[in-house]
Image (tube, rainbow, N blue to C red):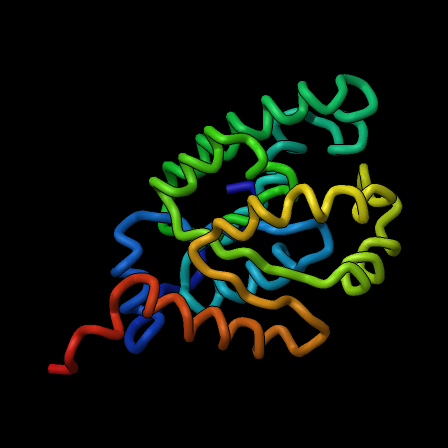
Amino acid sequence: MVNGAIQKPAESGPELAVVRALAGRSIVLVGMMGAGKSSIGRRLASRLGIPFIDADAEIESAAGMTISEIFEKHGEPYFRAGEARVIARLLDNGPQVLATGGGSVMDPQTRALIGQKGISIWLKADIDVLLKRTKRRNDRPLVEKIKDLLPVREPIYAQADIIIQSRDEPHDTIIDEIMGELPKRLGLRAEKPS
């Protein structure tokens, strides 16, 4: 596994209930670059005791070059086709937390696969938060286009199963919010305790 070691499995409590209810599906984080998909995803995976996979890192590993280099050398359509193939392959490996690239869900087939094999969570971040977080990353393609991309992508992101506001709060606060929503989405709150 390129992205990280397998975590210690959850042994009890709501984390174990969530992992069992996933039944092999992935938790798929979607949203713009800078929304916190990788940093929050790593912590969420650790809390659940399941692997964390970053689709962008998998794409770079498979291509032997950075995403910026792929864009520069081959163009966006080539990158998007490869991204769709990688995400389709990764979705067969749940349960896991999978962080996707910002534009990946614009592909209808990728969205459909995520719907079948995952629970999607949109980490929704305001434009000022995104710009602040991404200006530190000069290796990311399309950073300067965030303002143009956001209104186009937000209606697609809004189709996610769960929407969580990503903001400048401790990551544990965001994880707690996700853990508050996952059991509801997975139908666990309806069960009576034994």
